[in-house]
Length: 372
Image (cartoon, rainbow, N blue to C red; front, side, top):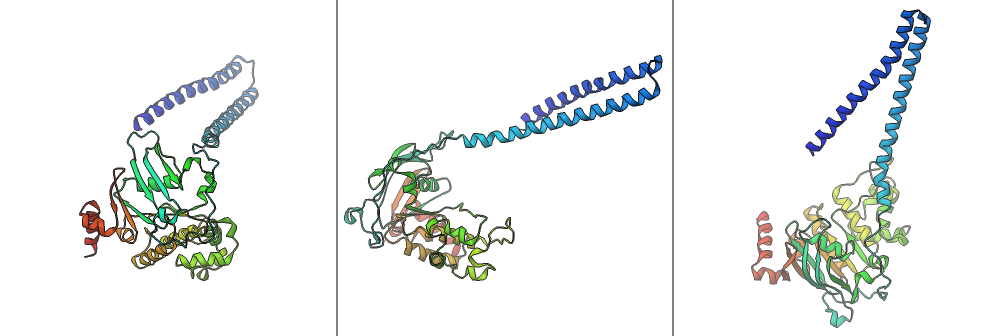
């Protein structure tokens, strides 16, 4: 990078020097002509003052013209990425098939760990799923075989770079796998209507959004039809454990959040994370899949335990995927998937994996030792 910058600056300095010489000669020639005319007597001292002023004014006008031309060129270069972005063609193509509509209360009536074969409602199946990012040869995920049953809460754990968040985003179809297929109720995700699919998913990602908007909008945008329903907003605020937050704000639900807004206030990291959880809960009535990626990263231990209880309650009867480095959260899940270098290393309940004495036990004991 420094080598390229040095070359550009060297070429720029040389260009400036050459054009400075040309510009100097361009001014010197008419000056010399006028002075020579005065010495020869063909021009008077008044002509000298007149022509000198004209030359200076013309020189200044040329400078302004060239500078503005350069500004226009800079602006045109800056707009190129904008048009490149607008011209991008989505790589995710929506299908035409739709998931069957859920009957009212369908998910809530399922027992938390009822197998798909018993419930009659197949879940999500990953068959030999692989994925690598464009321009990167090393695969992030390799030959993942996984089934998530309705009513099952699955934790994805592993070291950084193991592919946990990527797998969660594949389930939401933010990406398509580069190998294998993902089936939802027996249908390939790529064959399903994209908007219809995502309307059945509630997500809280690690890099959740902090919208510069009102508290109502930050929560209600999770499900637009209920944006103006104060009762629905109150329910999710209570479920997220921040039901008293509107009472502490000057304008309640209409309080602007974000310092960039006039009279806007900022929330703490934990409050923002609970707002993101409440936003995901807004579409809970429509959601069949819940995805939580590090949902308690900004919470203190006391609030963290409360959120664990909330997750267990709202996940009842639904498919839930939790990505977490905190194995205390994985402990409450029905099944734990240990990922390492993009592959499934271990799978089972907390008790089974601890008895196995493998990588999960090592990670759990290492975290537990910090509290002893």
